[in-house]
Image (tube, rainbow, N blue to C red; front, side):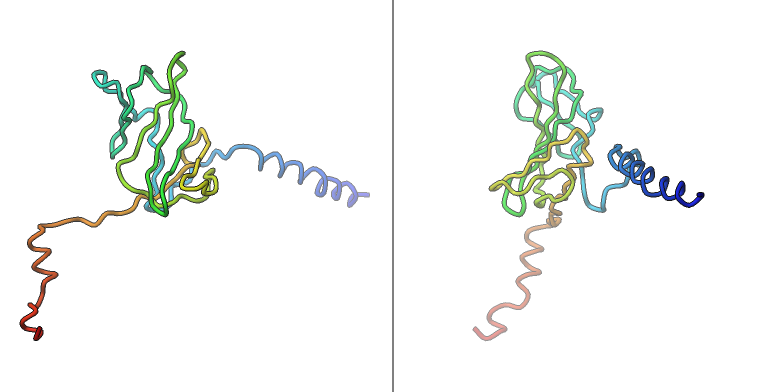
Amino acid sequence: MRYPKFSLVFFVVLPLLATESAAAPATLVSPLPKGYLTCPEISKLQKDPNKMTWSAKNGWKSYSPSFASHLNKFLGAQWQGVNVGNITCLYQSDEKMTFPVSLEYNLLVYMPAGGKWSKNLGGYMNCVSHDQKQCIFKPQIQAKTGNLYQEVGRLKGTSQQEIGF
């Protein structure tokens, strides 16, 4: 008699608990993979009262003026390009008569994958989520440029006369 009760708990109740916990949002915050970024947190956004544009540190900027005095919701992100492209993050205010604010990142980023990113829709991809960590992306690392004349001298190496041309 003891085994049938155990079987009932094991085969009926346990799958229900597993389904319930799988549907619940994750509370653990996992670190981003190395080299990946997210859209800025709302608390990091600042408005320039003279230009009426929004920005955040590390290369985020809006180009359209906004009447919103504060932002309170992340709406998602959009990537545009071919293999590498531009990323735009969208934010919303709860104020009436305001449009969403779009912040653009100043570096090129690789085509994103995973999270809530859609498939490639012909040169653009959307990530619709209220959680920035569902819309991660990887910026393309730009090589540091030095003195142009030193670089040319280094690349020049041996002259054509020494080679015999």
